[in-house]
Length: 372
Image: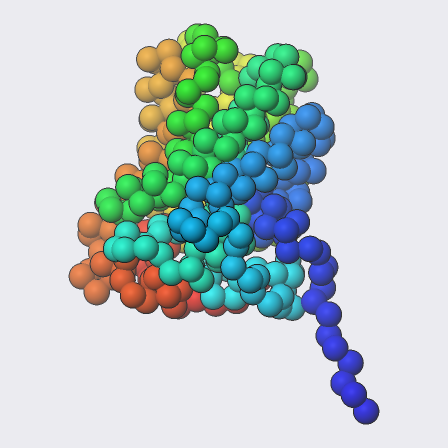
């Protein structure tokens, strides 16, 4: 009797899985379930934001694919890897996607990355999340929706093209791209369309007055939305991929909010900004990025992100998510410089290019494991 073929659970098309993982990467998780929760959270806040996230992810992925294809070979990706019986049914098995590591791993700098590694990065959404953030920024900040979506698609494509060079440049100093490509793409149009913008989202009229409510709202602000319910849905999606990262993210949001209030952020942003989560999102993201390195490193990164956020407010600049990205890179570089010699030098070696071992945000090396 022939054995019945086992179908993977939630056998979605690989293109949709790649799209959802790209959206999930905005909270550093290559998990399609996390991406679906992010889209749901955005739809609760504003359906236009959900559309922008999906369109921006697709535009950035396509732009990266077109610009990274070798000359004379076109832009078609290599054959997709076979599906596996996993929760998101298709995560590439040779890249670590477990709950203990963010997935914005540094790419190899010595020579050209192997095709399998490049394809794995594409499937994990690493080329799409910058476009997600760039498109969300445009739709959230530009009042006219027609103009907003036009700029969103252009900015998302630019962010997708910038991801690879920014990643390679920061990999040389032990950092990672995080949200910097999206920040750079947004700053190209932000002074022209929204001059003098410092507060990037308005507080809702029923904004919570407690730090706990502000912490939940911070997760919504990480994707240019507002409200406690969207924030709670996004936090649930993060916990689906990594409960540890979710817990540290809440602690990072609370810590950043307290530090910014103590530093005088009320004078620049007002009490409503704190209630809406505008003071905590950079701390939450920084804590997620350094979660693999432990609570001390994660909260230290959150505190540094809060300091950089406050500096931007004092300078009258829109912080966006630059404080998180800079803080995560700085803490990672410091930890890497202090690591023992046998933990260093993994970026750019043959094993990394082949996908056998990948560095985490703190510069250490993992043996790859199947995702959750």
